[in-house]
Length: 187
Image 1: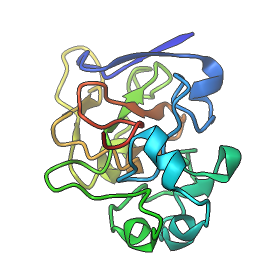
Image 2: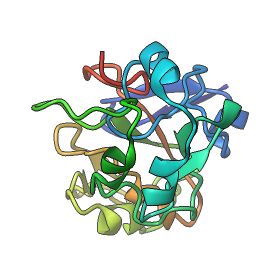
Image 3: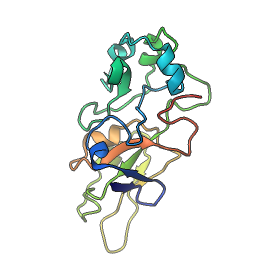
C-alpha cells in the first residue's frame, strides 16, 4: 500500500500500487463515472451503455469501462485537458443516467500527490500548477528546499488536467470524501 497525500496534509489516501499506476478505479472499488452521474445503483439502472456520452466527450476522458458502462479514465497522457465540464456528455445522455443538479459539483475528485513528485525529490517542477486552470495548485516558498505543491481543495474542480503532463506520473485522482458527491454520483 502507498500513502498519498496533499502536501499540506489536507488529503490522505491509502491506495495499492496497482490502483495508483493506472487502474481506472480509485482503489476503493468505486468506479469514476462521468460528471453528473447519478448514485451508482441509479446510474447502473438508467444507463443503457449506448456510448453517447463517450462519443460526445471532446477531451476523450470517458471510456467504455467494466460491463460496458462509461468511466472517466485519468490515465496520465490520455486526456491532457482532463474534464472541461463542457456538458456535452450530459446533453448526449438520453437515458437519465447523468443529471445536473443546481448548486452541486459535477463530481468530487481531487488530485493526490505521491512521494515520486519531483518537488518532493528537491527538483523544481511546477507542471501541475501550470496546467491547473482553476489555479488550485500553488507553490508557496519553503525554507531549505524546493516549493511543494499545495492544493486549495475549495478551488479544485477535480478536472484532472494537472496529472496529464506530470513527468513522474506522481498525481492520481481520488474521491474527496468531504464533499457531497464523489465517484458515487449525486444522491
